[in-house]
Image (cartoon, rainbow, N blue to C red; front, side, top):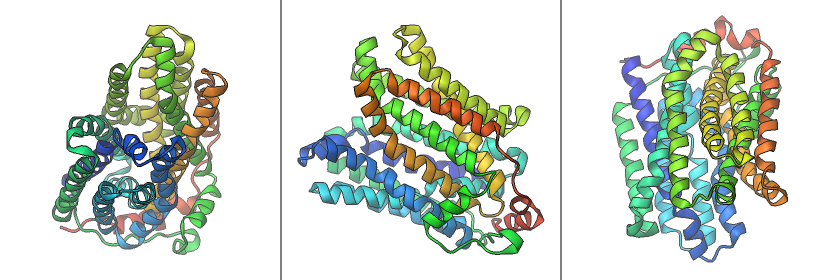
Length: 405
């Protein structure tokens, strides 16, 4: 039952990201058509990540209390509703509100991560989390291309198609996802997890010695990567004579490399070297790749992109495994906090990178490299999980959250 459930979760995450990715190529242009300035376009694109920053720990906490299945289904249904609202938006304010709703409902990733950890043995955990990462990556690889192909339908038509895909995903999950008993989130001395909203959960997570460096590393690595995504088009045009078509091919290749690493390589590396070493290696590879991009040498540019993509795939999967190791029974809350760290970086990174590019075109990439190197140092100093997070009480709580046939 457990092994049969995993592909269902991978597919649910993939289709959720596919629906999200379909509208991405058209969203900035639609905001402009509604009269948006560059600031409005940035705000619309940032709204999703900002809402995820708030909602991630809350949805994770709910999944710990009430089970993964109902919260994941609610997130999938919320994605369908938010896409329909995005298609109906006829003003900048309603478009902004629709993207906020989408972010608030964007809990498929942390809940899906907690779900697969519940269903796998510790030795298979990183491989399973890598498959979740690969599902996310492939959704982003195919989503924008499909959105571009459907662009003849108009923005509203594309949103409704994406919403229909999301609704079909919800209905498939309703039938195929296994039922679970609610998880018990044991904490220190057996106390239950706090019933607080995300700020309290974030603060509590940052106080855990084994969680703090991992969360900071996730923020630093995501900040560096999203900064590169925001400014690479400008760099590519300036140094490598790349236009929209070339950039599309490059970013598709980056996504494929990340998906291949997460879907196949990271599990084997983790089994041999451990999650912490893989996470450190991934952040260092990211630093090397970022340094290579602005050097102006064509072959180094492409090699750097491949190295950067591989490092990002290793870092994101291995840090997720480290979160699972430190979380004990409160998996949903922990993965939600991890998503908040990533969402904060996605909200701030592009703006900061754009400002750095204006100062000097190499700065976003060198700044990202420094952040990744600092993340590697933090991970190297990471302490072992606290006994209360991984002891028999927590293990018993995880075992209780199992699917029933």
